[in-house]
Amino acid sequence: MSVAGFKKQFHKATQKVSEKVGGAEGTKLDEDFTEMEKKVDTTTRAVIDIMTKTTEYLQPNPATRAKMSMINSMSRMRGQEKGPGYTQTEAILGESMQRFGRELGEESNFGLALIDAGECMRELAEVKDALDMEVKQNFIDPLQNLHEKDLKEIQHHLKKMEGRRLDFDYKKKRQGKVTDDELKQALEKFDESKDIAEVSMFNLLESDIEQVSQLAALVHAQVEYHSRASEILTQLCSKIDERIKDCSHKPRKEYVHKPRTTLDFSSISENHNGGIHSARSPGARSPARSPARSPGEHERPARDDASPRRSFTRLFMFCLNTVDVPLCSSVQTRLHLFFFACPSNPFLSPFFLSFFCLSKFDIQGNAQGALKVKGTNIQNGGIKSAIF
Image 1 (tube, rainbow, N blue to C red):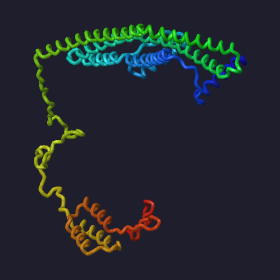
Image 2 (tube, one colour; image 1 turned 180 degrees about the vertical axis):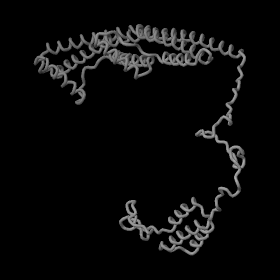
Image 3 (cartoon, one colour; image 1 turned 120 degrees about the vertical axis):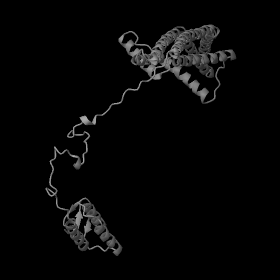
């Protein structure tokens, strides 16, 4: 940029700051021009928003749209053709229906109905793809062309007009320091830019019938899609109704109970691990297998319960007298009664001894966290000395 151009840009910035901050009044435009400028601005915002919302209507999944955009961008960078199109939800649903229908088989009424419904969804996906293509060609692309050419051109003319207006106002404010020729030249340039911008806005607003025709193309494409979809769904309803009628006229199959599994106890070996052993009483043995014995042969002597009782009595009295823990008389009485009342049972003796030890020993915690029993020091889970 030359020095003259830099000075001109500086003067424009000075004039704009004085208008925004200092409250200086610039050249006012007529009401018709201001009204057209507002309409053009509204048209620009409408075109951008409608294109975005139409794409979301045709392709509602944002993740899939982002993936498609990335694939198409990479394809253009590599000079390749466009990537795969948008995957319709009807196609996904139809594929699932057909897969499970084939798994159920032809003998299943539900499986056959799923196959028919899946084929219908596949056709709906094809019709939806046709709708996407038609709307893109006849509605989105013309709006995109309008935004990138006509509207951008109008914005360029308005921006150029605004710059020349600031230059004219700056020179008009410094009328004594600027020659009349410079001021007149600035005014001519401003009027020229204003006329060009006004004509371009007028032509756009007067030719809005083109946008109406583009909107009509969108509506016609939707009508075609819905009418075709209605035909496909109507045919599917007819198929399903016929299938329901056929199934209702068929005789209902009755369930035939299968015989239950029986177990032959005679075939089970006695020595079979995990099997069922037959129980026989000792007196029911066959004389051939067990010969007769005399009553006094191999007879065990009667079990003497007094000897184990006396041994356990000594152990009990030793524990009771050795552990120096005060017990009330009622507790001691109950322990004695329980001991002498119980039979001499080898399974009961360890249980009673454990119960007695847990209830008799006086366990106290010292400052170091050790446990003490009379004659016993338990620390860190190990017994250092015991009373027995």
